[in-house]
Length: 194
Image (cartoon, rainbow, N blue to C red; front, top):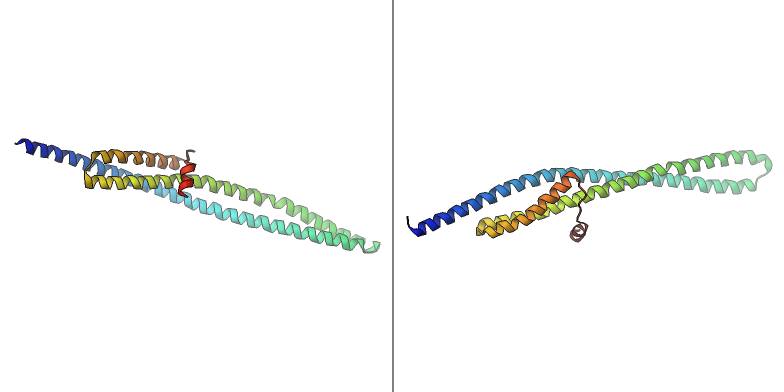
């Protein structure tokens, strides 16, 4: 064998090794991204449910609040009307006033539960949104890494494969963080991308 043949064989072996590394990396990333996408989709569904629950609870709160306000207005009207009525009619007015006072107090007490639940649903949504942001960041960075790996295959540049490892590490890190619900969140980056 001539020296040039040996050089060509070594170059071809290096290229084949690079191609195998790229193919294996792409397969692993695609699998990781698929698992993350399933988890992210479930989180998005839970976010939608939390948002719907929050809207429902605020509607219940508003209904209770409206009932309380209506009872209060009716109570004021009855008190004003009772003041102008003769003592013989006062007993009927006082009974109606007492009933409206109970209704007003009942609605005031009952409206707190939906308000608290709406606040809890909003907090649940925000917590899930942070995890969704982590999955989104992972997905975006891994898409960049896959693009770099595709260019690596075309150009056969080892340095580009090494450069692609940076977004791979970041993407896998944020995908793992999101998957397990850890509290690492790049708020500044999520805000920038929103």
